[in-house]
Image (tube, rainbow, N blue to C red):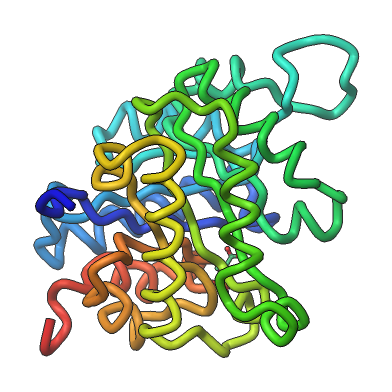
Length: 263
Ligand code: PEP
């Protein structure tokens, strides 16, 4: 496989937290915290995923103040327009300068019955509108016991990548469901093992070029104290961060993992 030229990506999934006013204060504080610490945004890409109702405000702020954060949404509709009350089209997200959209987060799969096929439809919708899907896959603790760590995420990713073009810009996030919000992160070895298998799926479906270019993230109880250990793994290209992305100093420290001792 080619040399790793992938820019690390630290992505903050705010979930249903922070209204648009709180979002402004948060983004400004995060920006200044990183700037004062001398963070070089070229070395690590930062992306934030606020609730839909914050997107316009945050987009205006990062545009006006030239804040070097990418913007993403937490979900989108499979459809482009029409009678789908409450749904949000990829068209609308593209107009708000969203670069990314999270698809298939375990909370959507669990509470909104999103199947692998729905996830695949959403991946297509994202790509139709020039958004990079952050495709979330991961096993529950029951899956882990029954099938081991990689079988379920590998199967989920295979379906999500059906009919995806070889040159598509995608991100994969391995998020073991048992590690999300539990405080019990996977070990770096566990994360590496599954992320490597997921990269093999990208290679099989989209080709070796895509596999060497695609960023594979780990997510699940990532903190400033464990991020560096994940980032040392060759197939972990970043993190999808939930709870810790809501704490300015903690999230800034995660983004600055390269400055941690021993990295
Ligand atoms: C998530 O929900 O994507 C997540 C990784 O959450 P946390 O970091 O809180 O475990």
